[in-house]
Amino acid sequence: MMDNLSLDIQIGSLHLKNPVMPASGAFGFEMESILDFNELGALVPKSITKYPRGGNDTPRVCEVTGGMINSIGIQSKGLPYYLEHIIPQYQKYDVPLIASISADSIEEFTEMSEIIGANPAVSAIELNISCPNLEGNGKAFGMDGDLSFELIQKVKSVTDQPLIAKLTPNVTSIQEIALACEEAGADGLNVANTILGMAIDIHTRKPKIGNVMGGISGPAIKPIIVRLIHQVRNVTTLPIIGCGGIMNSDDAIEMILAGASSVQIGTANFINPLTMIEVLEGIKEYMRRYEISDINNLVGKVNLPSSTSTLY
Amino acid sequence: MKTYQLEILSNIQVSERYWHMTLNSENIEEPIVPGQFFNIKCGEDELPFLRRPFSIYRINQEEKTIEFLYLVKGAGTVNLTKFKADDQLDVLGPLGIGFRLEEDWDSILLLARGVGIATLAALAQEAAAKNVKCVAILSARSNNDLLAAETLQGFGATVIKVTEEEGTSGVENVQRLVEELIVEHGVKAAFTCGSMRLSRLLQKITFKENIPAQIALEEHMGCAMGVCYACVCNIRESHGIKSVRVCIEGPVFDLEKVVLT
Image 1 (tube, rainbow over the protein chains, first blue to last red):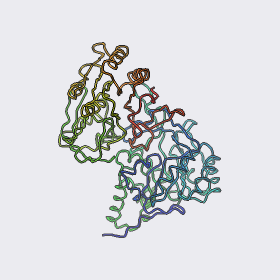
Image 2: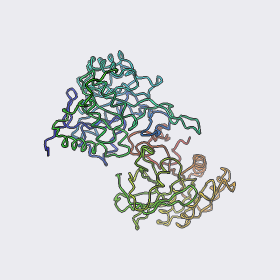
Image 3: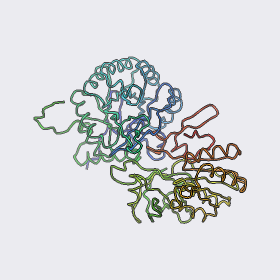
Image 4: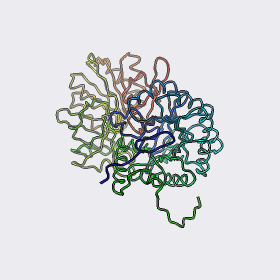
């Protein structure tokens, strides 16, 4: 029986006592009564925008096989409210707070990062360069390597906070974007945001989402995320946060073996608000069973066939 | 709010489209208020993937049971019918803000349609316990869908049924009924659920008559805990329109404030 498991992981200068945290947009202070936040590796409140945003038309979610599509539209009360009311709520917890930022321009990302980065209650910044729901036919900064590079470089110049780039899976080559983020100075990569999708009600012939398209999340997308983590791991040594479709600890371990050192859990919280705690327990159990004393020794330890021809 | 594994005491079909479920609620320590709801896990499979919100039909304090009356409509409710007595059901709740009954409201009017009748039945139950006189107009496609009428009558409510089947559920007829009943029963407050058309009508009448009214809204939900912002509606405040979350700031709102679409 192993008693001294080390679950500590590092993302740049950000230290996490364990690798399990919520995904932005699927977690909030409202869950305080049901979940012990102190058990988590980090806290990630919903993405914040500079100005208040009303969000998209309803319906904003619809169910699909093994998951859901959402297009919330980053409903937000704006940056001043966030600094004054949202961040202080989490200060009583002895867990690092990762602020997720969404913006419409590089200038706005930079300006917000400088302000949020200067807040002592914030331990890292996650740049949501991938939200597929903002204007521009689902396009995002994270679909363009040059734009991603410029964005992260500019943000890096105004704050010393560890920077995590949340990548979009809706690209031809996620490796190109991952490398651009690394070269620009990102400390970690979140792989990934939701996968752009669409569903139609065949009886009304209307899209099931008010905004027509939305991001698919849930177990349906997990194999895609595992593949993306594997691909990103092949080109960079940056810490990867695996995100997309984790329902239990087996899913989390799969992502760790593919190359993620930590995981985020979103949609599963809606089905079982205690998923994160159960995932953490399951990871520990797995480590004991296979006598892994340090979680970092599991990262990327997938046994690949020796003759793999890498077409990716 | 908490997740509970509750014992199913019964789960039976009560009409062509409706089912009725009774759960043992003795493990729930929090108070449960009419108008609140539970987010229920309707199966272990990939579909239904999300939980489904169900408003509470009856709250039986002494027996320590809660009841749901549900319309079998989609993947979630179809799957819910497969559960049997003695099975465990995974429920998250109680959720949301329920109806408010003020001390001096000695006579109330309920206007409900379809599955919204189940939501208002719990309020009729509380009204009965508080000796509040209750008159209810229940609207549905057919008499078959109005089984809950007997439940409301059992609580001492005066029930008027209107249906498409009998050609009595048109807005004009309901408007006449509401206006007459307000006078006849000295109605101090009104409550509605289940129909946008009827809600707009009640909003108009209660505004004109200066009678306080509340509405229980229904919306597609993601988390039902207030974190995902899927189930929003617009509320009219003194300084403008405000977007609120139905699951946590509602589902019950003052009718005059709700922007009905």
